[in-house]
Image (cartoon, rainbow, N blue to C red; front, side, top):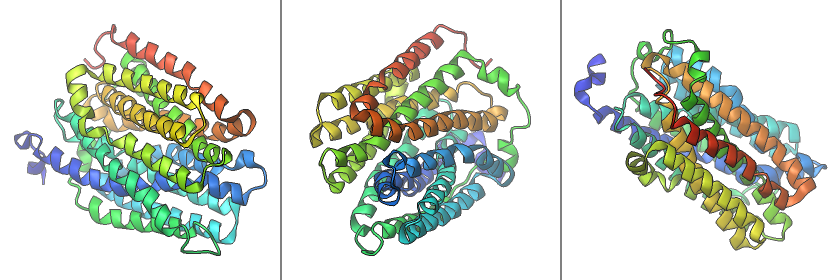
Length: 400
């Protein structure tokens, strides 16, 4: 098998893996899209105190953060492909639990289901790193972008699954949507089984520098901060948006379509993000993404029409794409091959831990401060992240 991973193959294997992982992303990416579209709305139906309505969405993010290190350990022991197969089974189980919570009208069971779905998400989030593993330095940003393109399909598959299944179980509205979510996870097994990742020995992280040394690098600090700000603010605003739209008198359909446009904007630019990084640099593209996130907040503060919400969500999505892909490409410069598993896990744990905190605070802030307060809180983190991205440019190269 080792000849498949020789340097003579160039990026042929990397391109094949990126396409496989893009397909898996199309299905796995529908997992959070469905929960974000419905989590707050279903939560509001199941709990009396509306400040807790977004807890199911927050638990999705917490599940991702909690699952990052265990997922890395599973993949280190069993390989990426076997790890992803296990992750898809976990996703199907989580969706089934969430559907049971909706059917039985048990808020705690629904929350447990979204948390388990988050564990599945921790595997899906590493698809971008798996694509980078077999890529050359020149192709790596494009490999990451190719995987993220799969999220473009997820942006249609997730919300459309909600649209076509939401009324199939009148006695338990939206339960069928979570059953569909589980079916998508099972279909993903057929795709990830085609992955040809490097042998387990090639991805183990038994050597290299101590993690603390790597994490003190200016580029690592800047890249992780930019990732958590781009992803954290996206989650913070996106979690609140559907509930804010309904509170402003807009329909659930408008809110669901808003999330669909948002997810399409998150992944659509991936067709050219890699090329933009190659031309303008990782730091520049990351900074533009952060700027677009701030612009989304400006639009959110400008009005409460459907158009204002949708435009803000679209800008938020594009900002996430540039900011997150750019920062992911930056962090791949911070480690040597033998260090990649532990650094990738540390990066995602920090990012998604912060995302979970942002998501948990979103519902309470929306309940007490309104949509305006949600948008005003976007600006300070963006300013800090932009300053760190600019700072790392003047530092020494991250990896000797």
